[in-house]
Image: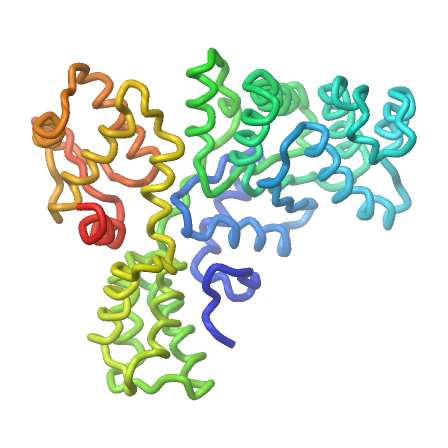
Length: 397
């Protein structure tokens, strides 16, 4: 078996996430969860593992919904996922079917009919209630890429529909005191970025204020080293690499140079098969440096810049300020004070509103680009992960 680079990670190969998963299950006892982190940290692997290995009394339903572009299509995905499960139990979504008939649908899949599009709120509420009432277990919806779905709906059907969908889901969670239906929201784009776009269009609600937020971090040194060693051993067993330094030593080198980010650990290990053998610790460092400078960007570091370009509004200079902040910080491996960062940005562009500058700093922290600390006199900022700082320095600094 080879290291898994960007594809499906079987649950038994997910390393170092048992404590995170246990804490998420504990949070779900009381409320639904928003799972956040930067891209390539392993959110999908975590929720898939939860879906395949649920604790007693829970029935997870995992759905990838990034391609969904309307509320009725969203309902369709839910029904298509749940109906076969209930059929095996000798049950059916009776209330949902009755509503479909009332609305004049010739079949449950008649989602393009105007009456279905116009009554999607009632359909969604009925669907969720019907699912809850037909399971003996607590149903857990694992909705992967929900932020992209909301963004799609905003683009295709307008901000009002996107707002209403978020509100309907929140209202359902608040009104339902049975505790038999929970949701996990996650995705490669932060939901807060999509909500921010809705705020600019007049949205004033907080659609996740009833949910717990759980931040997934990079792996700690022990588990990052274990993941690297696992991949190295697999390549050694397949005869693709030989080591001149110890397995643990090369594994620890990869773990440290990638800040424990699973995707980059696996990519670095995979890249070593292309090196002249045998492999040493310095080759591991060279492999990671090569990924940072790769003109094809096969490791997809460019996503960090593309996300700012796509989701940070150009109005009020937020996008330009964000890029200048990151440019100033990538040149230092130490934390910089807020005033120093502002001085750098002001030297490159006109900044007339310090509050706006501080909001962009806060957004970059919330988006996992930066970490924030404090001393007695100042707020201090630096890149959250040094591998991202190094990529930014080499490619955009």
